[in-house]
Image (cartoon, rainbow, N blue to C red; front, side, top):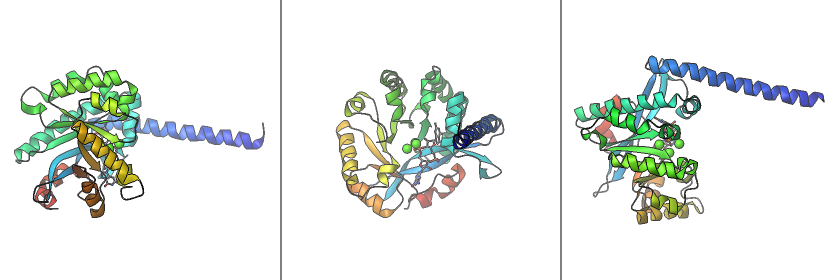
Length: 279
Ligand code: C2E
Ligand code: CA
Ligand code: CA
Ligand code: CA
């Protein structure tokens, strides 16, 4: 074997070793994070235009944060991937549901009635106890209303029949469903028309390209299709006023992004609600 190849292999195995090490670090850390209360749900408001042209908050998306000593330890997509691989996503997911329920109660105490969106991972959905867990955690009463589960478009590809079944069961509980990251997968109109979906969240990659050649047409195609299916569209990752205007003209119903607010701590959200609602 030539020296160069040996070097290449060594480099390769070192990379794998580094990755494995990080995986184990996240794994052990996450187990402790659950016990030590290092996980938080932040909230990012979602807006709709009212009749008088003002943008008002209709819902909030809850986004997971791992915080230790006031600092973010790992970004969510990174540690959620680990949790999905080792099965911890079930425990993390149940923690999220419980915490979301607590946040709901806190908001109601303050007289804030908005829908709350929870991200649900494909692995959670596939867990056979998922539906029972929701029923158990969310209780009977009025609590099943005003929840939206955000599920990525990609779960549809894994097994369409299973996802249809679960979607329908979730809907029976009164929970609404949003198809997240729309446009990054391959769901056909045929699939969509068979699913009980309430919202389509147009992926940020399209939103950031709004205004560029061809992309307005893509967004318009999505919003027209959604309208004909009776589904509302949410534009995610709206970062400036120009995008907002354009997306509104292209038929998007609701808007979310740094232009309005980053995801923030729930307490901060409650304190700033009046300001946020005056954008
Ligand atoms: P996502 O569900 O597509 O969430 C939207 C992401 O876009 C969030 O990133 C949000 O902070 C970010 N974002 C919102 N507005 C803007 C904007 O104007 N500009 C830019 N550049 N970004 C914006 P975040 O919080 O880092 O979450 C990343 C992903 O991690 C989420 O993507 C979701 O797939 C996953 N995730 C986050 N929280 C949860 C959770 O509680 N459960 C599950 N299963 N997954 C979660
Ligand atoms: Ca989401
Ligand atoms: Ca998304
Ligand atoms: Ca995503």
